[in-house]
Image 1 (tube, rainbow, N blue to C red):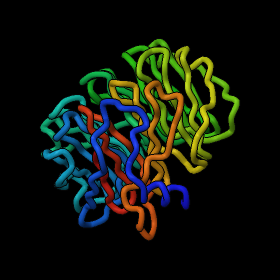
Image 2 (cartoon, one colour):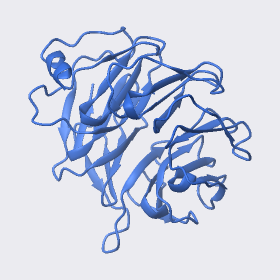
Image 3 (cartoon, rainbow, N blue to C red):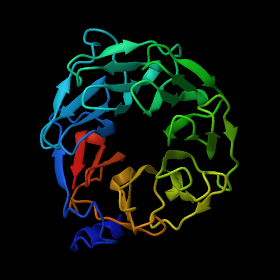
Length: 312
């Protein structure tokens, strides 16, 4: 905390000039301070964020303003929404607690519920196109759809929560979770193989830039990297020991990580060296937990507790 405060008092320093060098962060707080879990942008201007109480917020001006969208749960039991993904400006999904999954085909003007067949929380979703996608969550649940969520099939279940899923194409993908959980598939999820890791940390996010090179982040400042498709992973030196929740890379190979208590890390090109990026409010009474980071068209976005949204 002291180190980040001191750094934040200084000028922002370029770790490695790349696509996401846009200067300082802009901060926007949602009026009702709704806890935000995930954010997704399809253009520099158009994006969505989800969170507590079935909350879905949309922006058409790059995050300067946000408007709440109705999910169809008004008057009924609400869910915590953990993840959102759009494949274009119209079609997207949002998933959350007790197996809830919503879909929209008109940019979020109307959301309707899809049946997943499970009552375990959905913690992440990943679609490779409008038809084919996966959802992961509680008790190691992995679901796949091949018709845009019209039907979902269970591919795998076990006793370890899965926090994140990422596919590089319709065949090759990875899912990560608690207790150093990592599974990989090369046939669209027909079979998932467990990959042993030399750590005990929980893994919260996984991201690949191509079929060979990827990263994972998790508890205790864990950052791991692979250059062979995830068969072997190397631990990278982390400048912080807190929980790291999300990782993304821009087109020039510069990576961003966000985490709990306002953690923001930025990499040199190539993602092998990481440094602390100062939280934009050095005098804040408390730093919010940042739970997701997104990069689109040279912009970096992050969301977290207390309705916080960041953009640079």
